[in-house]
Length: 334
Image (cartoon, rainbow, N blue to C red; front, side, top):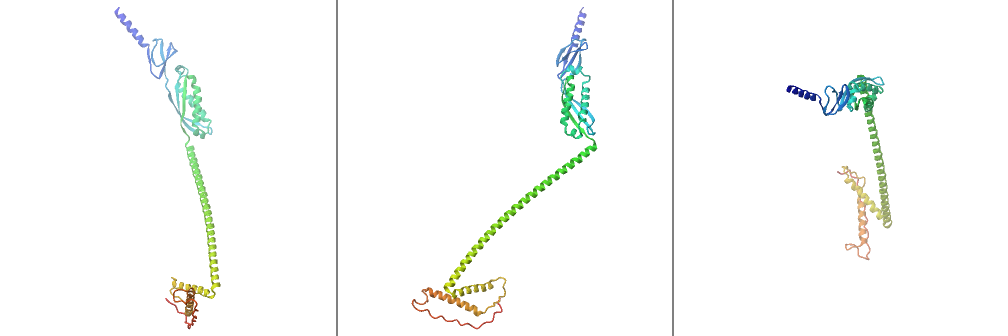
């Protein structure tokens, strides 16, 4: 009797242990009763009826990444390109993901591949290379709508790589190089044009300033000549007045003064080592004598405390100057 009770207790404990299930975090277990889905077990401790209930599938509820293998796709302009992509998805309904589709991963991969061919096949090669965001958005919309009955949410579809053929890659490289050379030549031409415009503008301003300077200089020169002419006119008027008042004596004085200055310039000239006088010494002596007589008369008329004549007395008679015999011109002096 005691052995039977021990055996019964052992069977009961074993039965209970067979009915205990622990679901890990991030997973959901589907519970099937007699082959029919009845419960989605959330993470935690669960009790099931052994031999009646069983765990059907262990569904991963975390966001997952599915790598789409490289595909050869023909574009709208008949260019063959290789494309790689990735799909990010998350299971929202474990029951649908387990029982609405067979082999969820293969189904998502096949669906993405076919829609990738459809979307990129309707585009030219240039569009496939430049409109990746548009391709990603269209794929996301189509694949997410197709997988929604499976209890799956497609969060993102990304194109990893697009590989055009080698000859097309070389042609694109040459095109890019030509385009950059064209841009460089355009920029260089624009810079040269701007430089010429600025240089012409500078020349224009320089010529304007130079013309204004010449105009100002001409104005100043004209004003200086006008003032010089006025001074010359006043000097001429004063000389004429002096000649009118003093007669031949003033003329002799001015002529003697200019003559003496001219002879003095010959002596002070730095380039003259030999001086020829085409004049007679008697004429120079007579000129100096005339200047002396003029000076005496001026001093005598003024009257001073020196040896001049007393007031009321007649002036002494002028001694005539006897001209000396002519002397031949000098041969020159050092």
